[in-house]
Image 1 (tube, one colour):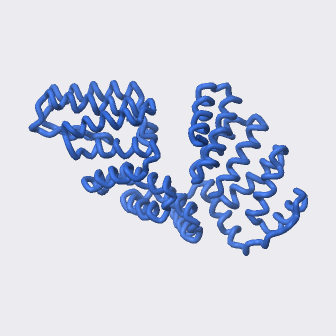
Image 2: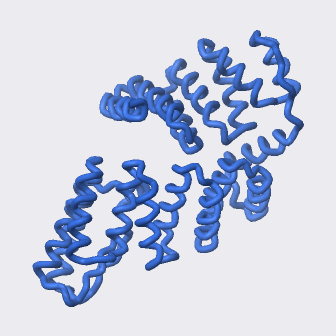
Image 3: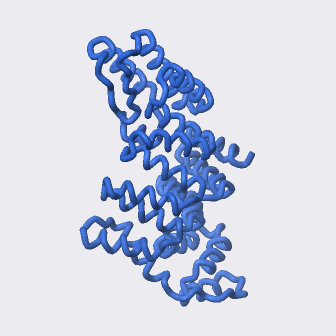
Amino acid sequence: MTKNSEINGKITKNEISLFKLLFFFISLFFCTNPFFSQDSIPIRKDLTEEKTLQFQEFFFKALSEKSIENYQKAIENLESCNQILENQVAVFFEFSKNYLFLNNTLLAKEYIERALQKEPKNTWMLKHLVSIYERDSNYQEAIKVQEKIVAIHPKERVSLVRIYFLNNKFKEALSLLNVLEVEGAITTELKLIREGLKKSKQPEFKEIKLTDVDGLKLQFKKDKSYKILEEILQKSEKNADTLLKYSNEGIALFPAQPFIYLQNGKALNQLKSFHKALLFLKNGLDFVIDKKMEAVFYAEIAKAYNGLGNKVEEKKYLQKATNLKS
């Protein structure tokens, strides 16, 4: 399985064919041994060959349906798997992923917890649980799970920094960034975020009544307030150069504010820097918790793909935006 497949929970047709070939080989020559991978299916020894093949067929149908976003059909095939062989970790994991795609976080959480009872240190499943908590905006629980992941794989601390941001735990984020720098594990981007955190520790500026952009720019130069920056970006949407300048500065100062990434993407689209627009828009999506804003992000991403002449991706993201609005 490719790295992208593991992260996105999606399986390509080629990978499905490969898995089928592997399972046939195992069933034919090693039918007494379990096969392990991210979507592993330990085959019970007392299953007949017919039952084993039925289980595998339904499981791969589930993966295939998920890959083309037919999540309810995938769940139906997983239910057939569960009738043949109950309490399988791989099946629970797939149930959870499909329910999350359907925005049913309650069932997604229930199934991943069943799987984790059997494999409590499975990193892929713990990461998936973090995603569920983030979808519910339950960042405190997401932090607890991410800390378990970090205990197993210290390199996952970068993700912990991101969740600290989402939960407004800037002190903890800054502390962890300092540790990463001492260890030589901090990237240039993280250094910029750290500097932004240090600057943002100034007292919050009181509400102002200035409405013209020039006045707001002067106030922002003095106080670096997010509220003022937000007003500048809102009033500069038709001025791509100003929008780009202040959104770039805003990302360094307030790296967890999705609105800044959105405005940055708008500016880059206006300037026809479509590849860069996609980069910043997709990075900003990590911080979005509001469905309305998520729909706006998808619409702007679609504009970037349109600029690149990629009609398939444009249509895909327009549909995502429409689904969230309905």
